[in-house]
Image (cartoon, rainbow, N blue to C red; front, top):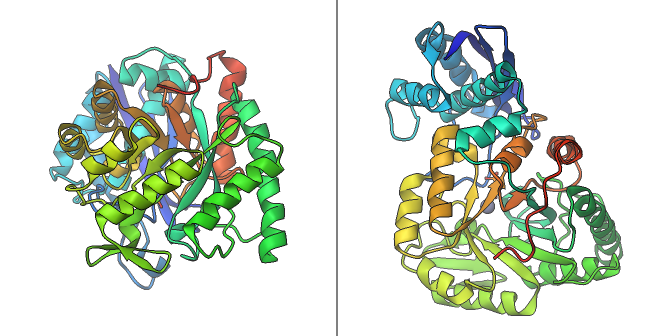
Length: 423
Ligand code: PGA
Ligand code: ZN
């Protein structure tokens, strides 16, 4: 049994300089740990509620003092001195305390900070690394290191909306280690920076996740420039390095149409546009190709693309077991983008993971556009054997905290990198 001695929280700042929640957890027996939670910008409407103070005089309303107060008072009062058999029991206690479907009473940011701080304290108490603790929470052994998907170019809500597509990511396909993946990515990032300078007269305009954000005139230009960068760096597109695309189409879907490249496409035309890109560029994954509630057309998207690329749901699924069950039933996609803070506890995230895997889907574990220097996501992707890891660019310390932790784990445990192609 694990008995909580002390729980507290405080407000810290994330990589956009906006407040977020950090929780401290002390267990009887002496283990103490803290954890901080990330925050999205391109959020799905079905996400659990991230509680903000809405006080316009402080951080434009984005303060997290209410969420912090919930940990310091109600959650601490309810949990301190109590014993829990495992993570599930702790998370269940918080879910019951909150009592809402989307954690809107206590805040998903408050609940998740405690959920992860408890996992970390438990790992310490047991004398195991955090990735092992995560594997034990999931109930499966350590298996593989993930394939990285690394942000190269950004648009949409993470940049100046100069192109509607949110992320074009590089997938180091022929790499067999994390180290090798980062070496390849460094070359491609530098090549892309040179191309940006030559073609747009700028180099250092980066977006929220560190991707380059030149003023591309179309989505196709963004994709073809990624191919050019791969070639310029001396790699073979499709063989050495593939491309993953986060279309994030909810954010340019309005009045029933997808507004892209000066056109207003209906869902069928949007699927054709995505199919064109898939046949023209070495794309291996298409995330949120349709908007989050286009349930009528997601099955057709899957039919058009499945087998060629991953049909990945982010805002579409929101790591929410109910939405995942519906998508499995409707054969609407074949891969889950798993973001723990979309749902708000480790236990529910594990449930989402198991549902996806049982349906034969792949799982990409992802961080958020607003991150902190906390590196638990790296332990999570190893512990849960995520097929891919989506962690932004190779610049900015909040991203490097996770890549460096993966390098450290790779140094400690000799796990094979997940196979390529991973079918
Ligand atoms: P977010 O975006 O963290 O800003 O929500 C990331 C993504 O859409 O994958
Ligand atoms: Zn996304």
